[in-house]
Length: 217
Image 1: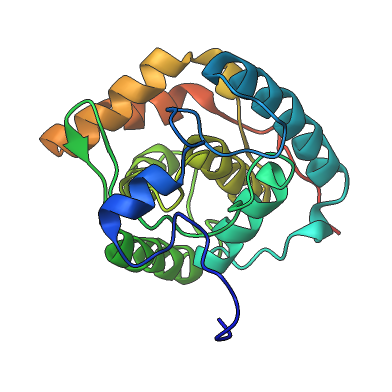
Image 2: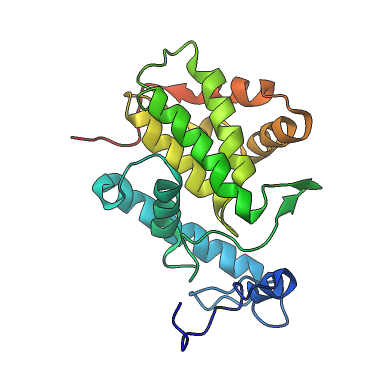
């Protein structure tokens, strides 16, 4: 950053200032590009705009370089949320927790995703993994990326699209519509809180299919 450039309010070097800096002043609504001043309007706009970008990306997957690492995950997030958040694709500058469970610190998030990237590379983008073993491996990798939680908002949506791209490399897909958000969140929470991947593995057993979301030349 040049000497004359002003830092955004969520990247000041002070954790407490960064936390409030993500919100519209005096509110608990995240700063956004759609003019939303309450959470419901922001959620509605985010859902609509991200769905449009998902359709666009699936139509032209070359818009994001598929390296299956942190740069790739950031590119997915940046593409999906570019119409909603100024910080789309940027790593968060604050700690996060949900349901009393903390995610990686900002500085450690990249390391967790790097471990996932190494495993994906070793397994030839999962082409070396058979359908019997895939659910267990997916549970392991998904748990790591979820623990990283590298973005201030939109982690789940970017993560699911990242894994849709990954599975498409081996001609497979993930039927996310077969489960609801409560099932997904419960499985993720159980994995992180108890170190138990059973529910995540069962989830992937249910949703893994041969209908890829992406088609590559």
